[in-house]
Image (tube, rainbow, N blue to C red; front, side, top):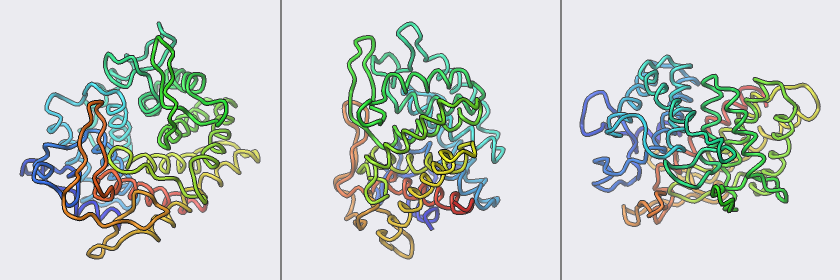
Length: 362
């Protein structure tokens, strides 16, 4: 039902071209949004990732066709190729396309992955201690870029670079007091920006879990254990992952839920610590999904999820207050955050994560 709601409300042919499909970023949509003047590269990457989830859950020709259409449309709307100037954007697209090719055989992804892998790998800057910037020629090196880039590179076989990035994140951005991952650092000045966001924790949980699988090294298991405990203490309320609002923040809680499911399903080891960590991660996903579902609205028989899964969802009234770009490049929330595609993608992401952990008996 979460999938169906996105398909019916948000998917639309790109510029009325046959064989294309892209996500309209708001519902109800403005005329500019329906024409894809606004499209938000990294939101569309997560739309592809969710479409891959659906095809893996219940394979059908229509679902596989949709992935191909979304991939082609992403390239067409980006105009200049697969890449852009934001390393976090490119990392999210690389993650989605790697899964699309590996699990669904989407051949359109192959050339894109070559270009994206090259950009992400070459962005590493050892001369200043490591890390990749969030944007080309920026002095800001943050978890939202390094986390997903590390996941993408590990999945593309660049295990050594992925491990370097995970070590950099742990050494540079882990807050000693809370145990959480801080947002980022300005280099070479060393000034740290200290906000903590759910998705930063999610990507670090994800890459540390995958490195534990590939390397078998204890430090990755320990980091998952410690960060998972910090997330449960600081990033949940009553076992439900906290919301990040709308706009770009609408994706934050869904990303954490996705990588909590990765911990639940992939974390290796039969020791008590690993068994309990898998169960704890799964419990956070299940509790969040139950809350989001209980607090959804039903609109024409389909769910509308809240920006905060622990509170009743609000119905958007018209198109006023639509999200827009800030001078820093981020997207603000609509007046009613439930209007934003990002919020609804998080709901879909969460439901797919809950399906996966429940199917594994966790």
